[in-house]
Length: 443
Image (cartoon, rainbow, N blue to C red; front, side, top):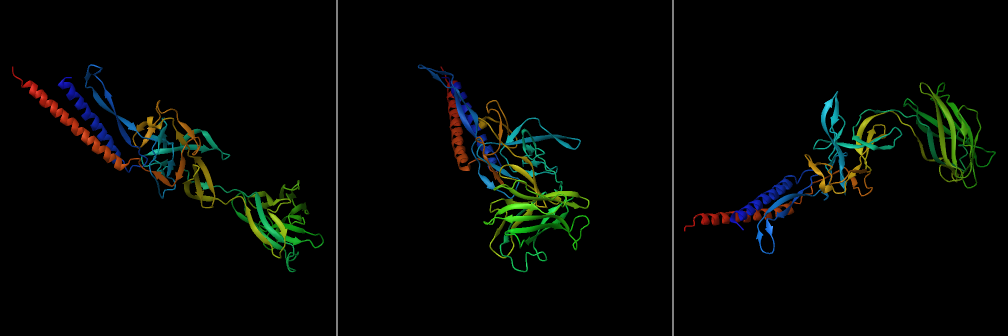
């Protein structure tokens, strides 16, 4: 082996250890970077001649060993739009490249990241601290998730349009022995339900109960409202009148329409277990005629409306669907990845869902600035799925994933690389001295 070969080998060792020190330096510098994945170093030898009679020194090269599959520490934050992935997978993201006619345009390439510190920017997009835009599935008009395409998620801070009520649900118990002064035509048992018309105005529907003194377990129900066209508080309009009969066990047995008010009716199928519903209509000025249903539970079951012992009318719950108009209040991410806009009327609307993207070999992804990655041939195809499905990790909302750098381990690598570098310099120095001795040889 020549002295020049020995020096060349030692110099390759210096180069390799320099690269290892560079990887350690990068890891330490990014120890607090959200979603950062460390880079380890692997060494490979190259041979010149190696056989049973001779071995000539070759060289060593340092290659990066990317560690994308090791989980970083998940830490809670106050940001309700932040999310970490517990397990395998990445967020799908885009990078903005320009604006056209006031609209942001994006890089056509699909990108991926573990940095989930997303927040809403001035244009309504969800963007992380590195400037990448979160992508998700959109929502169809019927509320289903469209899984055919990914696009940047954008929050529209509009209003929530009013929704007209269609169903009132009542769960209550009528007394078998009401006091003498109640449950009569002049002093009925009453309750109210609040509903909304198509314009978002609220109205009250009054339910009045009078016990039938001539028929066992039968009550007369009258639905009235003072808000409909032509009515007043002193003279409310009747929306429907019905007879409600209970069995000896206190459950509903039959419903009978007793008035001919327009839009009123009863359930046609009144067998055990079938829904017990009454229908009626209300004409609100400016909003038009509104069809409504009163849900009393099910026949021959102790849910909804019952008649058991007691002297008081006990309303367990009364509610109606529909809502008043609402203004934008906040936006949040749910555990299943749904992005929900919340309004000040208590309603919310799902505008998208955040999926998880997995790869066969995520360590082979191509790295980009800002803790982002591109798919490569070695990484395999991107598989887009719901979180916690088919091996994908779970979303931890309100949290971020920190760097997977272990400082103690990095300083250990630093010491080893430093000592190896120093040893290689000694070899270079020794070889140089030997070459100098060779040059200084005299005959």
